[in-house]
Structures are given as C-alpha cells and as structure tokens.
Image (cartoon, helix red, strand yellow):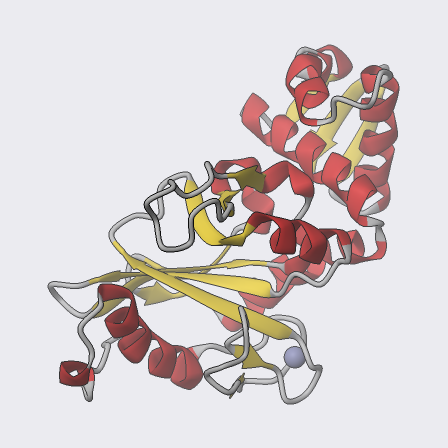
Length: 253
Ligand SMILES: [Zn+2]
C-alpha cells in the first residue's frame, strides 16, 4: 500500500504530484475486474480521461486519486463531453483511490464499473467566471451518493486489499446492466439505490412507492413513475438482484 515518492521533486502542482505517485502504484497493483488479467497496461500520458487498459479484454480505466475523503462528488471534465460520453456508453471504469499524504499510504480503492454511469449521477457545475482563463467553461461532477452501494466496489478498504475473487464477483453481479440501454439503466440503478436507502432486505411495494417523488425528480420526462418502478423491480429480478416473495413483497439478494 506504500506510495513511492521517486521523481516527486520535479513537480509543483498538487494534482501533478498526486499522479506521479498514484499512477505507478495503480500500474503495479490494480488488476482487471472484468476478466482474469492480473495486469493493466498504462496508456500514454496524453490519452484524454483514460489511464489504463486491460491487455486481455480491452476494458478501459480511469484513475482518480485524492488525499482525504472524496465526499459526495468527484470533479470531472467538461459537462457536454461527459454527457455525450455517457449517452454513447463510452464511460470507462473508474478507480477512486484515497491515500494518506502524511503516511504516503493507499487507504481505499473503490471501483465504479462503466455500466454504473447514467445521466442521474452527472451534475452540471457553474460556468467559470469572466475573469477565469477559460471563462464560461462548464465542468461537471459525478455525484457519488447517487450510485447504489452495489456499484461502488471496494478493492482496498482501510489499507487492506479485498480478495480479487470478491471484487470480480461484485463486478459480475452487475454485469447484466451493461446490456441495458443507458436511459433504461439509469432507471434501474436509481430504483436499486432507492431500495438500498430503505435500509432493509425485505420491503413492500408501498416502501418503494414512497420514493416515487425523488425518482420523478431524477426523470422529469416520465409521468408514469409507479409503472416504471414496477417495471424496474422486474429488471432487477431478472438480473438476479431481487426476489419476488408475492403479494407486493420483495427481498434483496
Ligand atoms: Zn480484462
């Protein structure tokens, strides 16, 4: 979990320095969750928004690192470009690496699979002010708290690596999402998140209906929210994430 400081003295900016010690760590320690490759290939430094690719299955990865907590959102690039990337279903898998600057140790690594991205988690930021170098430029955030916990897969927790098999199992569990169209997938993920927020394994249709207002806010163009919720419960059942107990009762698996 140790981060090397080799070559660090040549860089001044905090974000550049963070790259210098987190990227080699990623190249040496991160592996592909989508196949059985234990290696990832580092992509050339000028590849926009991508850091690694899997030599075996071609999966693409971006590494974002931060000292201290990520909080509820992660800053990303231009809003329009990211919106297009999500709609075209070209988002990479993302590693979120949290490290301790004082100890130079990796604390946590979470993986957000590419199929966990939908427009629901994208937030537009205020345009840069007139005095900024890139005045008017509009960036975006990923809202981490909009991602269901199932899709925030722990690879390192409190400085300890999680078993590779556990990580790949968690990734495979959600893999059926990749087959859904982005718009539909957004609904599935949002309903799953609302179920998780109920904080119980068994729940009733009325429980999830009580979250209809929040779901309507995320999908303002849909006027049949309750129908949509029931449809998504079926999608989650078909994915093997939910069990139908009958009489409007459900169980998370
Ligand atoms: Zn792979």
